[in-house]
Structures are given as structure tokens and as C-alpha cells.
Amino acid sequence: MAAAFGLRAGRNFVTGYLYDKIKKRLPERQVGRALKELFPEHHQLRVRYARNRLVRRPIETFFVGEQLHIDQNEKLQAYVPISSSHHLIIYVRSLTRPFPMQRYSVYLFAGVDAHSRYPVFHVAATRKTAIIPYMAWRCAVRKYGLWFRVIGDKGSENVLVAHFQRQIGNVILPPRRRYDDPYRALPSTSNVRVERFWAYSNTAVARPLLPTLDHLRDHGYFDLSDPCERYCVAEATCIVAAVLIRRLKGQVTHHYVARVGRPVEIFNQFRGNVAVPEEMLLKVEDAVAAYPGEVAMDCELEGDPLRGHAHLQEQRFQLLQEQADVELIADDLLASYHPRYSQSFADFVLSFITVTQQLVEDYL
Image (cartoon, rainbow, N blue to C red; front, side, top):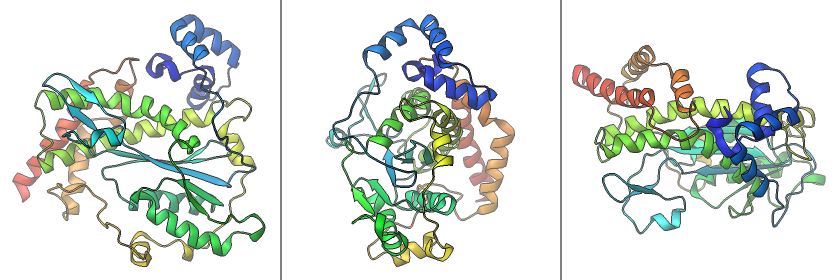
């Protein structure tokens, strides 16, 4: 496991991973000595570039439920082709605009409690839309209660969350602890909690998936200019990414954070969220209708030829479940430290395309 996660797999991270898997708490010093002996080069890099360095503007919170940090990640969808055998991964959105690029159309959304560092939601979607963050935020509020403040960026994907966080917060939050603005837009450099969480997400979710997708694209196994194939690639990637996300959450929530504790223990013991009546948490359709601006209602990536045929979509997923085990695909993706081509993941992506095209020929 440490080889699969590489530099990020320090003693705290590995201790949390082992507790999540075998429910046994091992001494952190013993785990640290084992990692130092097995991977000395990673140990030296962790010592030299400590991740627990001070930030320019530290976040001060007093209880769980005070602040929720949300953000979206595009590491799985932006790259610039340079030649048939080489490509350049672009991480900064402003640098990618002048270049022609294709997209895998897979986006990651996450929300992290600022006090406990506990990820309350982490989802993969095939489209950058305001509906996905709102659905995740609504589920988190229904389960845990309302946060006193939500911190995000000024992106269009956060408009629904910002609107209803302000609307509900100004009504039910106690005046003594109420912020002037229940939603605050900050640049990514100040949204520290969720930005540090992306470091683990990129290593455990995006990094293992990209080599196989790039290999299939470079060798012409699919064409992203075809809407049908583009949808199939994005949807198959999201299915596998959901398994990787579930595993990552168990590892991150059980590892020990210096001077803080274990996120899952802090989150469960000292929660101060305010309960919200069910009627105030509008469903997606009602929320879009109540929002004063315009919101794209389409949650799905365009190009699915089976859209509108629920029985065919269900048949497609049944056929895919018979052909592949997503858990085994995730094991194969995490089996090596260096990102590599995964035959099982490639077969799953190509099977998704083949099954979809076959159902279209037979029934449509």
C-alpha cells in the first residue's frame, strides 16, 4: 500500500489505512520505522518537505460545524496533446485556455469540515454543473446539520450552495454565533483545508486512472470527438473513481493529524451543526426553480444514446457487472507505486463502449 501511494504514505496515513482495513491500531513509531527501512528515499523527501508547514493565513475554528470548505477538481479532464506519443498534463486552468485540448469530462467535488479535517462528501461527476455540489451539500446537511459558514470559490458551480446556505443560515442559525455572510468566496490559496485534501485525492484517485486513459486515447481505442464514446469513457471512469474515493475516505479519516487528532473521532465527538427542517432543504428541481438566476438543469453529459430509456440503461449496467468486478479493477490500479497501464480498467472502459453501441444497434 505504501508503494502505491508513494510520498503521501507517511506513518500517520499508513496507520489510518491499516485501522480502516484490519481495525487494529498499530504504534505510529513502529509504522514509521518500517516505512523508513522499506522506502528511505520517500522518508527523506517527507523530512525535507514537511507537509505540516505554516500557512500564510491560518484557519481558526472552535468546533465541528463552524466552517465547511468546498471545491471542485479538474485533474482528470484537462490535457494538451503534443504528439501521438507525448502529451502535457496541464493543472492550471488559465494556462490551458490558449491551447486546443480534449477533455475526459470527469470532475471531482469535495467538502471538508475545517475543524476536524473530515471529508463530509467527495463525489465524481461527468459534468461541471451547480447541481452536483448542491446535491452533495444537501445530503451532508440532512445527515449532519447546517454549517455556520461555507467557504468556496467564485465558480459558477457553487451558486446554488451559496444561495441556499445564505438563505437558510440567516433564518435558523443562532444570532450569537451567526456570521455576517454564511457563504464566503475565497481564492484557492486561502481555501486550505480542501486544497490539502486534493493532494491525497490526486494521488489515490486521479493519478492511477490517467495512464490507462491516455494510452487508450493515444492508440485510437476511442475518439473523444464522438459524443457517445466520450460519454462512455467519462461514465466508466466515474464508476471506478467512486470506488477509489470510498477507499480514500476510510484512509484519510483514520490517520492522525499532528496537534489535532484523528478526523473521524473529532467529527463524531464535538459536532455543533444546527439541525435543518426537511421542508427548508429543497429538492433539486425546486431549488433550481427558486434560484433567482439561471442554472443548467442537465446533470448528465450529453452523448448517451440510451438517455430516456431507463430499461436499456439498467440492462447496460447489469451486463457490465457480469463482465467486470469494479473492486478488482481498483485493486489493480493501486497495485503499483508508479502510474501504469491497467488492462482490467482498459477492458472495462472498452466494454462500456461496446455494450452501449450493441444496445443501440439492437433496440434503437
